[in-house]
Length: 353
Length: 287
Image (cartoon, rainbow over all chains, first blue to last red; front, side, top):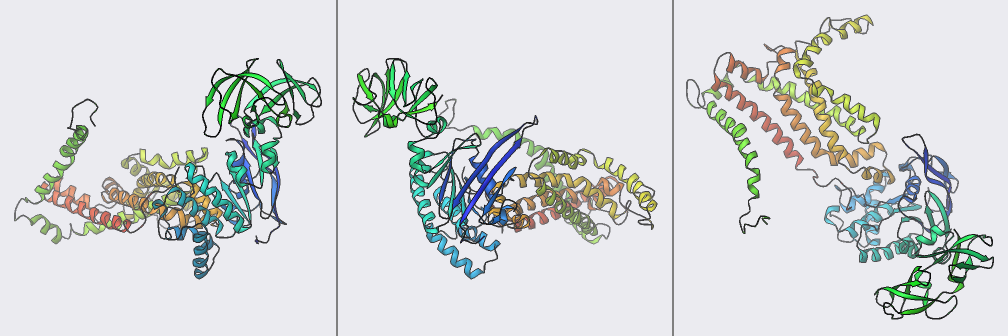
């Protein structure tokens, strides 16, 4: 339980639910992950992917069906939540509505039997860390959403837990506040020097906050990698779709070096995973990687729609085969205009269909 | 805004007219009539009935006889209902059955409960026979036709009411709050003590008031299961005797007014205490 831990290990953490008809379904299927001290890990995935289940299992709010949780040499999954010593920030903040900000933040310290003088000092430090000076004696109902969120964070970190769990903490805030709090959370994490597990369905949030991202779908882990890798090299088609590879073309692998025929077009690309010649494949392309103008893998297309977006516009083009592609480009085009579109082979990712 | 077009006049207040009329006809008027009646005694001045009530030793002590029954019954009902309702806050199939079983007595009339109790708790009832057969208790068992009979009856018929009311207050509290307290190191008891109980106090106070008012107006079980001539001569029996044995409606009204006054005093006291504690939303944030 000491803060001088080395690492938190999740070993095959599994949570199964029994359906009414007797079948069991794994909401979380064998999550194995080692989180060294100081790391910020984001669990990323669409709703129902098991990321919140994982967080609740770690916190002790849901019992595991299988697997174990270790903090160095201490096994934690057999303990009730109150004996694990993790801090948790809930999606709806879960502040105690009848307690002032000060008492909310002091709650964990009080439960640990910390002396009143030390409580006061540590609460003051936590209030300063989340920049809520002057609000100590207000009730949660008198605070804005962003302020409530800060109280929730302060309450979770004031006990100096080895691990802070955050369950979509920014999803109830407006866009501007979300950006501010994102920076705030990152700053607080750095100051504490402990580990954070952050659950979100927002890829921007995960990419900007995390040291490592765990992409999940249907209860299982699809990819564990630093943000840049998840962004540029998704492990499979589902991850690619989730990370914003909005364009897909079905085709056949013509050559193991990465040549794909799709309709009348041929693409030089990068194979993700072992693919045999002649296999049906899908090409995944991010709108940002497509270029309006001549270049590698160039093909002709007609502009069919334009969404203005400031420096860049999102342009829909239709190929000679009738495939619709989204292109993000600074080039000004008109609807109906014939253009050339190209994409580098390194950004043309080929996945098994 | 009036959707039908009449500029200016807002006619929505008229929607409460039927309810207001009903209240006026069936509550306000009878109450005011009773109040007026209590100040118009058969003989003597305006306050003669109240003077009689406070000087007659067959009348004024009924206030305390009834309190002696109603307060313990209310405390027992709320006191037992609270932990059970707390345990039942998470909905499962089994708990749905238990809840149903606990609520069944509310569907039985007081008289039916009294009949059952007479055969079960009576001196030759099943309870006495079983206890004596097992030699657990060999003395005489007197649980009917006395104070205890009425108290037990008040608990049986009042408990489901207190339980249902508290259950709705308990389930109204966001369960995430308990989980948040757990992650901060609070065990089950500390969660109840620090999070649930403070948020429940307004509800407990309200439940106490309603259960008390119900118990204080006890009548059938005090007659059927108690000793209506002595230890369980409650205030409603005194009013009944005045009205239907002495045909003194005016005195009966005065007794009824005293009964209402005692209930009002207790309710006002409890709600006054309630004002001192936190009353507000019982969820943990937005969304």
